[in-house]
Image (cartoon, rainbow, N blue to C red):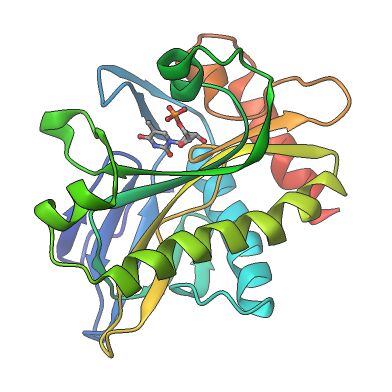
Length: 238
Ligand code: TMP
């Protein structure tokens, strides 16, 4: 599967390329097999990742739409392609954690696997040069123009996504440990969920064995990465 070559690139990120379409309000996202970690310091390829992440995002975004969370999803015309609403992205990564893992374990010394007392919301400022630092509401207002109301909206939407996706995955044998979302404004100024919801942007553990089924397998050189991305999609399609 090759990238669309006849369209102009709007933006190229680490995992996806955004292309202009004939409609100024729509963008074509091309999901790559390229994998990076630690802000691009580790690079590799996860065979089939573009397809798995695109298909998994489609399933979860459709579920969220049904449950009242507006997303940028329009259609998935090809295995690695998604048509989405054009968004002016808010440069924040909004994370919710149910179980400690990754940076919260390093930062606060909470052992990986500890169930948190309450789903825990965190914001990170999207800036590669700064290594995406964690920020609070006060920092955010100094970094960008966003109203208190909009900031509360994206925090509340992220907690709502957790309430919808966590039980949905558990029924399919997957624990939602944590995940990261990104939001943007559409042409009418409405906040929509953007980016992706996939094993690249979530931690998924097998509900029975706690086996990792996400990008930590790549970050930590655990092997069998493709196998587990495929397994996540299989369980969502079952
Ligand atoms: P963290 O434990 O490294 O802070 O990651 C929290 C969640 O956010 C985890 O599900 C992985 C996801 N994530 C991204 O999607 N992109 C990133 O750049 C980082 C650092 C984490």
